[in-house]
Amino acid sequence: MKVDSIDPIGKLEDNNIFETSVTQYVNRVIEDVKNRNKGDEEFHQAVEEVLHSLEPVLVKKPEYIKERVLDRLVEPERQIIFRVPWVDDEGNVQVNRGFRVQFNSSIGPYKGGLRFHPSVNDSIVKFLGFEQIFKNSLTGLPIGGGKGGSDFDPKGKSDREIMRFCQSFMTELYRYIGPDVDVPAGDIGVGGREIGYLFGQYKRLKNANEPGVLTGKGLNYGGSLVRTEATGYGLIYFVDEMLKAHDYDLNGKKIVISGSGNVAIYAAEKVQELGACVIAMCDSNGYILDESGIDISLIKKIKLVERKRIKEYADIKSNSKYYEGQKGIWSIKCDIALPCATQNDIDIESAKLLVENKVIAVGEGANMPCTNEALSYLLENGILVAPAKAANAGGVATSALEMSQNSMRLSWSFEEVDEKLKNIMVNIFNASKEAAKEYGAEGNYVVGANIAGFLKVADVMISQGII
Ligand code: NDP
Ligand code: 2IT
Image (cartoon, rainbow, N blue to C red; front, side, top):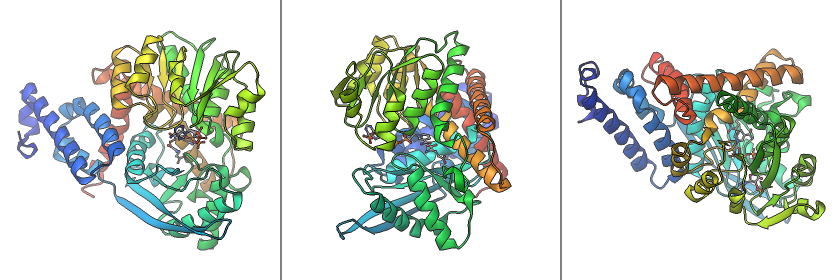
């Protein structure tokens, strides 16, 4: 049946036919996305995962089809691609590509991180921007969805090279962002140092000190306490809540975490604080196994301060072992797996290993760390999954709290922000739980988070008219 011929009210009587039509509508939108964004595999993957889970909502609320909400949702409001020329320490001219996708501004200014990694392209930025719409909606705070970055590789670059790159990147980006327009932050390869250089250049170009234009800033120029820790801490607050709802707790659990960057480190810190034991972590070269519990302060020193490889850990700690290659980390027997590195880290083979090893839960700290096939397999096998959009929303939620503090020109204490973060994560868990239950997928927080995030954006899109 053609979507145009759907009579939402008439068809509700004949539920079967209507459901077929909903499926056809969703499939048609997915086909359009594939045709319009050829080869953008990660973007297709993110869209397919979300749209299929929304089918029960469309059956109940056909007005979303009539208003073509999905068609509008999958098309970014604006995409900016730009040249980023810079000069390296040897005096050579280097050229990178910069991106910003301003996906959806229904509920607030575009908000989302910047990723600096050689793998960044149009597809990566769009998948991240698309995910961000639902994540930001789930936080309950007034932020729309956006994402950006560059194929620049920060590894091995000097401080001055990083600075010159950031200055060139902002020299183009500054005209498209602003505290009420679009507010970037960090992501892979972008932390406090990069935000400082980006902010300095924005301020210089605008001749205005507008702290609300970027989040993740240093504490002495408008940054918020807890923002550094927020994504990792938030992930653990969410996982803890999910475990409790199923009569488990973190005490004594063995944890495997992929990654050893911002999200991984603070997830590890919080989960150890709550009585669990992190036995393995990795970087893109390999993983370390330390059955006695990883020394997080040493990981911080190696990865955040010295910017070295995780291998160093095993050189210092004689009771630990280093394994070349990162993928093997998912073969380690554990109770809880926390992928906190990058997308598609857990594929179907890794998911099978996790099920075989009787893992209780998977908590997605990274964005889209499981392939769609892996995700389905985990859920079918009764593994509790804390989905990225919900579970890693603590970072952007605290960014929104940073924006609030900037607007008020004051700073909240660590305890105050941490308490707000905790409440937000509990609220996100409850919203995901309730939505899953209401739409017939009790215990499936992947579906629940998609639906809860979608409903708010969709209703606002309708109330703001066809724009
Ligand atoms: P960082 O740059 O601080 O750390 C990234 C970590 O992941 C590093 O250990 C890195 O290893 C590893 N990694 C990156 N790419 C790969 C790869 N292709 N293969 C294997 N390992 C890889 O980034 P973040 O911790 O900030 O981000 C991690 C994830 O969390 C991302 O998916 C990001 O989108 C997501 N996220 C981040 C938020 C934030 O606030 N920062 C908020 C919400 C989600 P190496 O050192 O070798 O590069
Ligand atoms: O993926 C994410 O949510 C982030 N990288 C954080 C975005 C933000 O604006 O704090």
